[in-house]
Length: 597
Image (cartoon, rainbow, N blue to C red; front, side, top):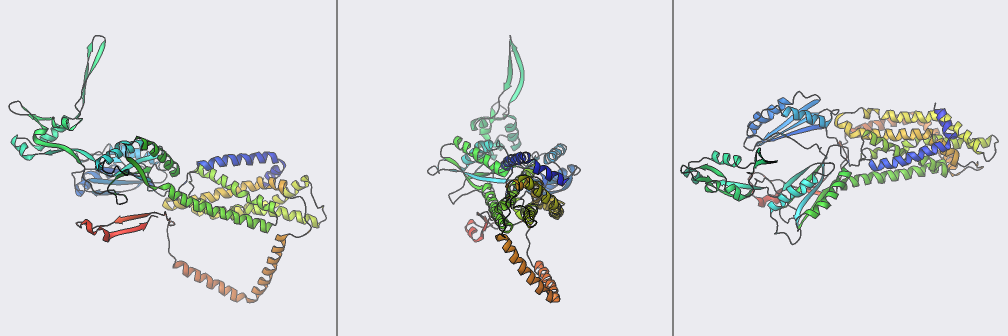
């Protein structure tokens, strides 16, 4: 069957040429669609359930919220484990599913179970965390006043602008799962009750709560028919200002005089309790956000979309405000991919030089080298098909020496057969028909050896393809990419290499040995002399080999290990640690600066 494919490729050059042209066009398109990231996303399929209960302690949160939810979700199909954390006012449950489960199906199952859970009445409704991963933080920014506008906007103004203008528009960006807001003051309308006034009017704090909740809502009624028209009844009761809150009636006194909120409390603007602050460059506090990417998204495309949306949002901001990014995933991705591209380019150049040098034929070397970009196009097409992203692990694992192995065997066999033809008395130049016959014959004889070598390469990566869990997500892309590239090179060795060799390899047979022949002859002589000398010291060589092996094993046991390579992003992060109760003047003693990896 392989012989028939080779014969067909040599005889139908135009058809194979069109096939390769389509290969190039479609592969180039697939290159533009390849998701690019720094490292593979090794996060497992998980769903986080977040429940807040501001008035409950950690023990009550565990007993009244966390435990009932964990019991309700314990029988979901595909569930691997669940872990929880209960703190003051917060319950966080992480539900982990197996890798074969669809994350959105898992979220639906968790949501259905949550609808059946009965939790404490003073707890908020359980919410699912965004469908993102540990590598989802792709863009971080701050909202700050421009120079000259520092005193115009308060922290509450910055937070309000972030929540109601910036965040809401960013949430509509393609690929964005959520935007987490940090810093600033969350504006609230505070009703500060005056205890003496409550006591004087014989009221309780519950009366105030009830009045506020019942008098801050719209209600609907029926309708009134008036001739041919219908008038719908609607009662508007939502408070629109602090004056509306002040005028809410708590109760009527014994003499019929209404008691208003303003009679028993002070209504004012305030802010939620703060547990931290966001600052930048020592110029005071700011507000900002972190953009989270959807699970499985293309970080490069999402960041590009976010930047475009940020440029549009900037035009809608109040005068004097600007959005300043300080962390962009594109920087780390470009650094990682740039390193891979440089290494691949250097490797390709070295392979081409070695091929031209040792084949002794410029055309033959370029023909073999052309397999590298073509097999890369095939590999990228298959990566898109199987959902493998381009990253440090997948693209960095490519070895061009493995890719061109089959093509080298076939082209070298063709050159050898042509030079051997001269020694049996054939003409110095062959016709195209004779060239086709020689190429087809040489390729058919050596194809078994080429296939055998490529199959061995693929077998080496089979154990990696069998990995599962975090290890599989980290190293499977490497094995898959190499397998795709070798498979593409195998197809090219059957079709493209015989066709292009019969067309472009010189049909003239040289009388004199070329530079490559002279190099190989010298190397063979040196090897023969070394081999002859080595046979005189058999026992010493065997003993030295075992000694070196033992030394290597010893050194291997002393080597350090890392699960993934360290990626120097080029930025520095600072972390301040302070014991509870310590004054802020001692912060500098606990300042830690470390590079982001």
